Length: 173
Image 1: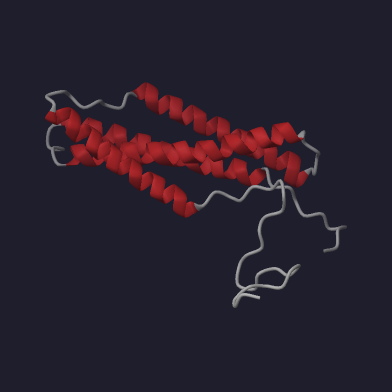
Image 2: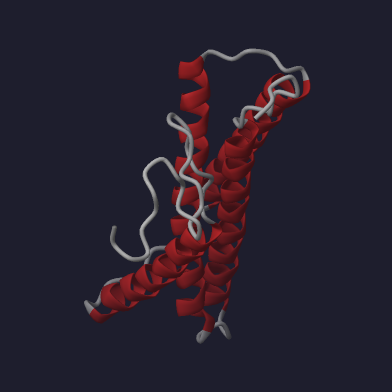
């Protein structure tokens, strides 16, 4: 036997138990923060590259804010509905529907984190020239889009959490 190993049939002592087959780990908050930081770098770099090429950096429109807010509202509603069905009323949900909702929640959290970072990068890029009205509006709109993107992340995480199957009190380990 190699030093530091475990006997056959025994779980490793210093490591977490692997997830049960067919289960999915919750989304890591650290990963979401890393994705958002990457998004900030992308946003700042994109604005600098466009302006260095003689172009005008894109501005965030009202339609973008409305679309993101609508998505966040839909995700919050889906999370609440799913939580009520699975956690409160303990209804059985079709496995394919549960997996679909789980993946929508995870994807929304990842995309929302990336977009929050990109919009924050846009806002930071225009922050230095905020004295005039054009850049001020760009900072405000980009910051609002970043905040709404964080709401999308939150709603996605709530939807993911709502998909957890509650522990059965009748089962004994």
